[in-house]
Length: 103
Image 1 (tube, rainbow, N blue to C red):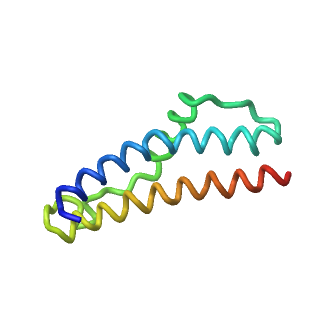
Image 2 (image 1 turned 180 degrees about the horizontal axis):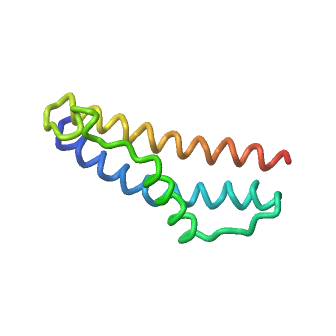
């Protein structure tokens, strides 16, 4: 895969992550936390909660020297992070769904 293709794919996975993360948070919350008496949350509220959590646990990307470089190694690093993030989000939803089915 060329660097340009990796950059484009990284951006696509980033957009998918931004859209999918609040959906997974909302789904998991409504499946599990509401059983403890908490209210249901919608997509926009879960988007805000995810944004707040990201703000609270923010780690400056300047700690990683590869973040702002444009070398092949840096592009590949960002690509693997984006794909890995999406994979983690999807697996969280799948495992949560399996647990929810057997509750």
